[in-house]
Length: 389
Ligand code: NAD
Ligand code: MG
Image (cartoon, rainbow, N blue to C red; front, side, top):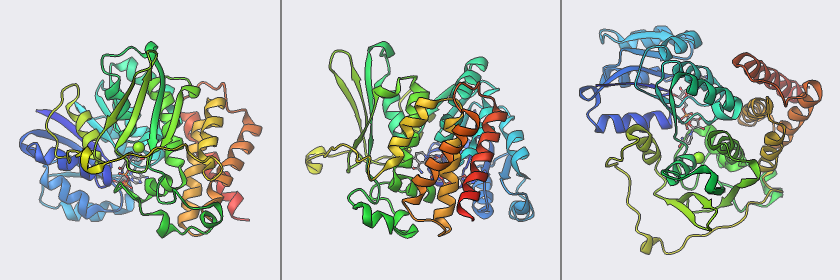
């Protein structure tokens, strides 16, 4: 039986992952090693019971008594806190889903690679903050990282059997999020509730707001650069409101290979679960005649400065990705808390990047888990200071 762990099992990607595992036979078909979640310990406990997991971990120590109570009599071990997450990642597994949201997902995923596992990586923040480090660790231990972001899964699939030397460009699509057609003046007034509803995809709140600001696409451009090792100028973003075409790969003979599918994350998760095979997945089949037409347009960098910032981050390299992501997470916290406006997020990220580039010179730094995590902490501290005086 395949041994499987799911980090972030109570989130949007986690629940979709468990849905697929359950459809494939659940505890009868897989040996579930560890599941992890945050404050939603009742859901975590019911998942662990249903799949007869060996271990359930909440990220928050103060939730441990509640988790223990919810697991009483089930035989599932309970644990809590960042160290417990690392210990869970140390338990050998054949396939591990990394679906914690934010930079908190980096350390457990990194640790799991030691065991030469297959790491299905939904946590794009890992690649943005520490891409070269993660890829080197995977190589050192013979582990495989499989993309779960829909665009990157699409590119990965379009590249099967192809030679990267023949790739001219990679185009990732963006729905444009909740505010695709909003003018700048209206964006300045956008509320958390308005930013939290996505036209096409059902996702966690943070990535949904990041879609509205295009910070999600900015992270994904960097993710593309890191994962596929392609030069930044060969990566394009294309606004495509229907979210049917997920990505395209352009080759040196002029061919453009597109990946199409219904906007359902179970496709990308299932592809990573079954790779290198394909198996039947419970996603809607497209009726293109009924869809009729697909629209494409260029992104508007004036309304969505996050995309411009992503280019600057790639040009700097080194620790810039860690700073960018952490400042973005801190700005998002401040926006959700009602302290800053929607457009202030990009302005804050830009200020933090400029300040930290001035202090340290972020490029040309050999990455380690330590310097990535301390750059992350410093960027969050700075963002906090900048919004609290
Ligand atoms: P979510 O908010 O729905 O779930 C996040 C999960 O992480 C939950 O299990 C939560 O308990 C856990 N968590 C939160 N904070 C934590 C912390 N500090 N330490 C440990 N665990 C913590 O998020 P999501 O939408 O499922 O996204 C998860 C990851 O997948 C993100 O990196 C996101 O960018 C990526 N992703 C998501 C989608 C999607 O459709 N939702 C698509 C592509 C990529
Ligand atoms: Mg995506």
